[in-house]
Image (tube, rainbow, N blue to C red):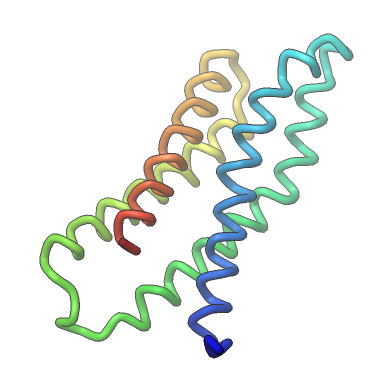
Length: 134
């Protein structure tokens, strides 16, 4: 039997939070046209409801991401691995910052650019995470 340990739990929480953060954005983006049909305020209300879950997931991602990095033994990873990790950390920061811009947007341009950049950076961070795990 495969042992259940903290490494499994850490990875599970990280993947679960990434599923909510990235998958939720894709789902919400797909629902926006239908939400608009329900009324002009419906997309904003749905986004606010999603934010309550999404920001919690982002916090779990950050905490488990720091935990993931903390368990790496110094010198045990190649320079290439470390470069990809640093790029991933930068992309994660972009995802969080652009999500905050999107959530606080006062103009349609800021809303659109913030939303697009949030999803794009979240997808890139997800890809980089899978690449690092491979």
